[in-house]
Amino acid sequence: MRNSLSRRELLSWTLAAAAGNRWVTTLALAGTGAPSASNIDGLKIKDATFRFLQKCARDDGGYSPSPDPQYRGNSDTKESDLAAVTYAATLAKTVGWELPHREKSAEFIQRHQQPEGAFINFQGDLNPKEDLAILYNTTQGCVALRALGEKPKVDPVHALDRFFVQDTFKKLPWYTLSFYPLFYAALGRPFPPEYRASIVQHMAQNQAADGYLGDHVAATFHMVHFFRLLGESTPRAEAIVKRVLHDQRPDGGWHLKGPDWDVHSCFDAVFILRQLSWNSPASHDAIDRAAQWALPCQNSDGGFGHYPGWHSDMDAVYFQLGTLIQAERIPGANYDLPDAETLSWGHAMKPGKIYASP
Image 1 (cartoon, rainbow, N blue to C red):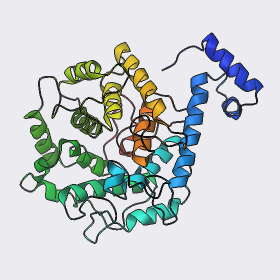
Image 2 (image 1 turned 90 degrees about the vertical axis):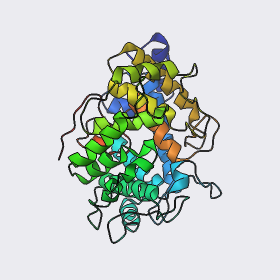
Image 3 (image 1 turned 60 degrees about the vertical axis):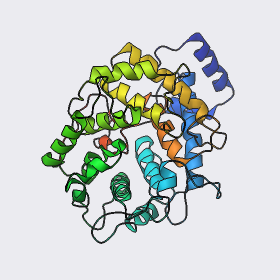
Image 4 (image 1 turned 180 degrees about the vertical axis):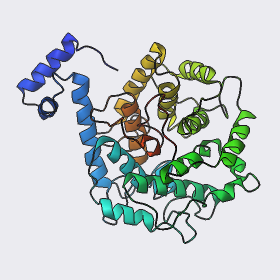
């Protein structure tokens, strides 16, 4: 989001270089020329985050929500032990990290697969037998294995068919709607047109005039994510962008319905703006302010909390670093991955790019 190097940034870079700053050396060796202060900061953020991730890595290949053994996680990491390892794998593929126990992580995920193909959680608050758990864990398991360059031991392609028998998918929260095409993308399989039609009709019947689903940015994000995964236009896109811009708080965030509702709201809003109105100066400004909001969520241990001052958590690491990646604040992030749409919730997807269907 930065253009020319300001005098202040140039002075900061010069002072850092004089002090032998290793981030300047890294950038110079990469042939990037004189780096801006924001690039230096981005490399520091990335390095500190990786150190936190390494401290969360377990010997069995899984990842703890935090190095603090008393901390049980928040949001996804509280619900399932497949969350943290998935976010570690998809971020690592995006920014080029070498995970500590990559092979063990793949084996850890594969042990969660059941004979019929679905994945379950061994730890976390989700009831492994319930529909939401089966959808969440099966999608995350396939996404993580794809990011690690591995495949499920059992072909799970029919594991989610159950949700389209008597339209069971309608009984789950709005935020689950893009899980289905993401699951098929991770498998490299085409999304069944009859499933697409059922979900599109369900959304069309419930989308408000302002473009939102469920009067919430998270539900609306998953609708936009759904259509972007399929390379299709999002209905009422202009209205959605207008509301997202209107709802941004003065501090740059989007937490409007209380902390527990909105832990991913900044990421969700940035994805919407990046994908639906990337060429808009107003959206660029909003995304830049969103990045400024996310920056102080990083703690001294290198991890991120969902809000400034909150406990570091691998879930928050994904969504806050994902926000910064979308805002182009993290040098070295790869936006040219041919399967970027398979990496979690779209942090590496190019705006407007239509990804090839299998």
